[in-house]
Image (tube, rainbow, N blue to C red; front, side, top):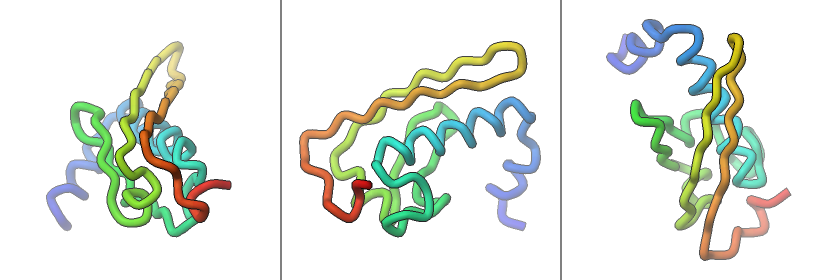
Length: 96
């Protein structure tokens, strides 16, 4: 098992929920969600400080985007709001 896979298995349920919700919110800012326009789950990476990096098809869709996140927890729920700011035009295959 790769070191990063071991780290995933050691996540608390709340942290795992935050990562999942963050990836989903960020994918939606691309206009694709996951598994559209070739965007796969590993293409959006959430780092320990909750900075986002794009890879593969997500990087093509994101271009020079900047993502701002708001992550809130209340009574066991996680709500993530992602705002995407980009100065370039999104390619047609990346918009729904």
